[in-house]
Amino acid sequence: MTDSPAPLVAVIIVAAGSGTRLGHELPKAFVPLAGRTLLERAVESVFGMREAAQVIVVAPEDRLDEARALAAGRAGSAVGYLDVVSGGDSRQASVKRGLAVLRPDVDTVLVHDAARALTPSALCDAVVAAVRASGAGVVPGLDVVDSIKRVDSQGAVLAGVDRQDLSAVQTPQGFPRRMLLSAFDTATEEQTDDAALVLSAGFPVSVIPGDPLAFKITTAWDLHRAELLLSARAQTTGLPRVGTGLDVHAFDDTSELWLAGLHWPGERGLSGYSDGDAAVHAICDALLSAAGLGDVGGVFGTADARLAGAHGDVFLRETLRRVADAGFRVGNVSVQVIGNRPRLAPRRAEAEAFLGAILGAPVSVSATTTDALGFTGRGEGLAAIASALLVPAALQGPVLSWEA
Ligand code: CTP
Ligand code: MG
Image 1 (cartoon, helix red, strand yellow):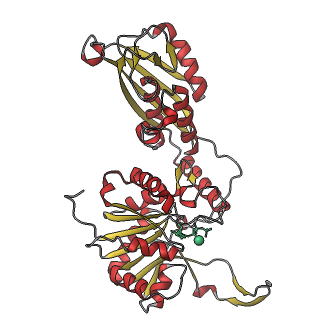
Image 2: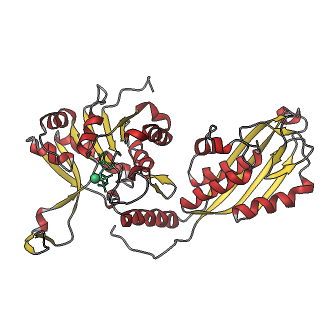
Image 3: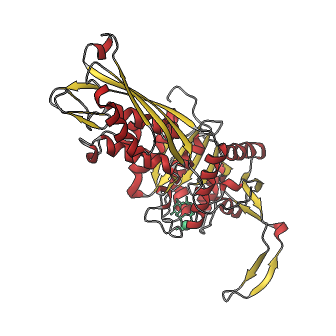
């Protein structure tokens, strides 16, 4: 990224909270939501902004490496714009840690909660545009639809509050850099958001229309709502999804051959960190690609000790779990092995039955040679190419409505 212009916008994604109210065993930003963590979803939305931005993830001190890996996985080619720092004891302290690593050219700073994982990129764009247009602080907000009452600690209603005067504000909240830094420098009290801090420092802040999808995931109910929204979105976008996968492994005479999930005694084995089953790896790539979940290398890595020598069923079951979490089931899979040996035809039905039973869908296995050409023709290794069709899974559980 060194040749690209330095970003003028920075987005601080605060993700260092523990998520007490969610009550999950993991810190909130690391909780999965339909196959991806809240942090990954928030990072993906921010990297989807029209303008390139420095993205600063503020993560729990003991999970910096994990946060960096998750965020980098969603940053794509913009990974050079990503910074990860450790958070503080309060949200405000975490924001402050993020502000400390702003790059020199940045003039507009957005602060965003990782917990608002479904926030559309367009809302971030709108906040940036409004900060530039007004030269002041900008927060997205929604009209309050409920009647609001002021109550005492016993629950007695003291008075009504006119909801005409209220806005339920969200993030990202955007500010000119100098305004935000000055507000943090002079802050004496803890505030629940950045707008409050900037306002108490005497700077103007205005509200632009927010987005219902930018709601904060705070409780288990909110997480469930987010899952339902994603599942409904997968359903209503409705179309099946296809994916392609290719894998190549060199022959290795010291290994046993495992291919298409089967053991092939007496055949030359394939090299690889796991069992080198190119057909299964190609299928996993096709499934992950169809679900938009990346690829085998990204999902499984190459250094996980649990995968040393692992057979195809381990990869297939984990891939299937992720695909199901993302709201899909397998329609069918087709895989073709390219190489001189082994002769697949005699065991085609066995391989198809084995793979099909794991995936719960028809799997076709075929094979071809390359007329003695190329590395497969020379007998140096095997290739496999797979296609997968995914269909949106039926919506599970009660169908709830939500305000749009
Ligand atoms: N946050 C942070 N550092 C903290 C506290 C909160 O970075 N010390 C972040 C959270 O990760 C979250 C955002 O601020 O993305 C909004 O806070 P909240 O929803 O309250 O999250 P938590 O503090 O994690 O949840 P809880 O209050 O239920 O413990
Ligand atoms: Mg909190």
